[in-house]
Length: 131
Image (cartoon, rainbow, N blue to C red; front, side, top):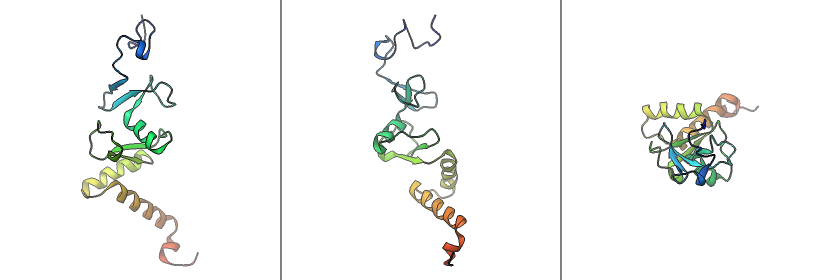
């Protein structure tokens, strides 16, 4: 008896008779790829969209960072379709604003967020006053 149903005869990955090329879909509809040495892998798999952006950025994406699919298609993992939000809070706020302003882009949202954060933290600088 094996506790992990994916390990047959103690064999993992390509040696397992159920091997399907290292790609699978998770229950939320995202494509998972087999990368057992990845620091954030779960049971040897990571989400493909995260791996794509990691290749583009040349670094690991932290667990708090959120990869967004611009077109809403969870299987479209082309670099042009992916946008990295610094955290899930901003990702959720973007979706809320996008409902009100359908033409809002991810870049414009982040620019507005950065400007409003700066104005909130440094009101004198924004008003033109000497600090």
